[in-house]
Length: 94
Image 1 (cartoon, one colour):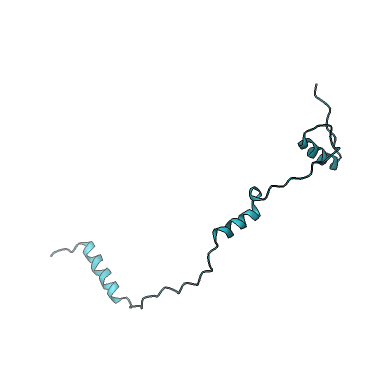
Image 2: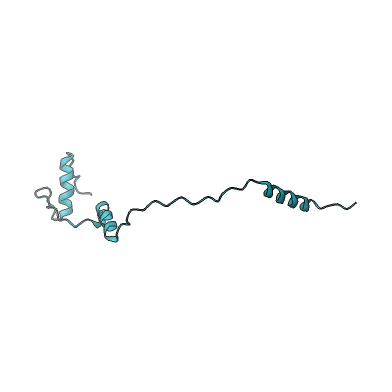
């Protein structure tokens, strides 16, 4: 008696199972929804400019006066913030 290899039996079983499976109609892909028009590059840049500080127009704020004895305008802004918080600078270091 001749033995049939197991792989051959599995192949025969798979073919029989596939042939016995009910036939289904092919599924048609759903119709794609119409996409809204794409944003232009100018619109994208305008949206980013509204969010990013680096793309904002440069402003020139008024330098506070009579806040400090220093001539540096940055010191005047710092002194104004300190005055709003009731803070005073410490004296010179040794």
